[in-house]
Image 1 (cartoon, rainbow, N blue to C red):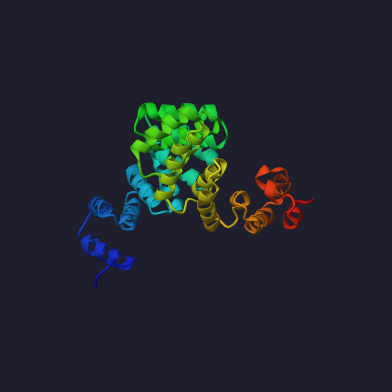
Image 2 (image 1 turned 45 degrees about the vertical axis):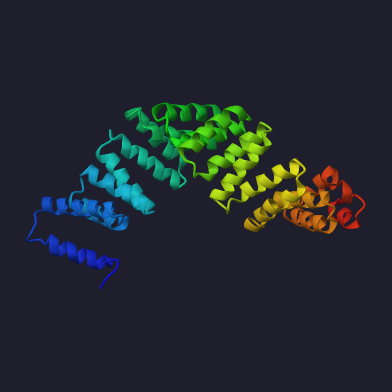
Length: 325
């Protein structure tokens, strides 16, 4: 029989390797760990997690075994087991900073932000050199809208690791939110050199260049984000909107249409597509997409009444019927 062994087969092989008469408990643990590391190196993470879990049963007070089990459980998506074993590692060795760090990551994945925050704070108290702890604290502060604190944390992470790509991306996003577009462009350009295949980096770089009114660079950045991730609906939308703003109405149609295809509930994309068609003199298409936009977001009706993009439709009865109170 070939292929991946069934779970019971793995256990059968382990019993053959380490039967009760063949190995002492210490030898059993050593064999399990050796097999687990061999499986991890071969990319068989579920197998490795199972083996480490068995080892913790034989040596329940070994913090390192629980730590490795927790890491592997997280990698295979078993968050409950990851929390259980990393929590035991912390309880058994409270001064082991990496266990606090990784437990904090698990808490964030499970939506328990405050527990994650406390775990990261403890991690950096124990080891002020933990880049990932500062980064994750920065993410929490950014999500809470505490931009100054988040900026300081991302910069602290970058001081410790100047090649920490994720910190550049988050810092760039923060600077865009603050409309500090020049600084954002510098930070995100650095991020793009560290990882030229991350669509988020180029998306945010497009926002920065757009804020600087660097039209061609913004278009190129959004196009790069789309090339890296063709399903990036907001990148298609921003590209189309940028082209609309620069009166390239025909070119705006394709990215806006694609944004709607990817996200049929994208009311702003429907609205801007209607505006592009209105400028091109295609009233029927404009009314159709404006109707879709208003159906998704009724507040857009009053906006359309005042929007010069729809000047050509002011006398169109279908348009009037759409936007009247």
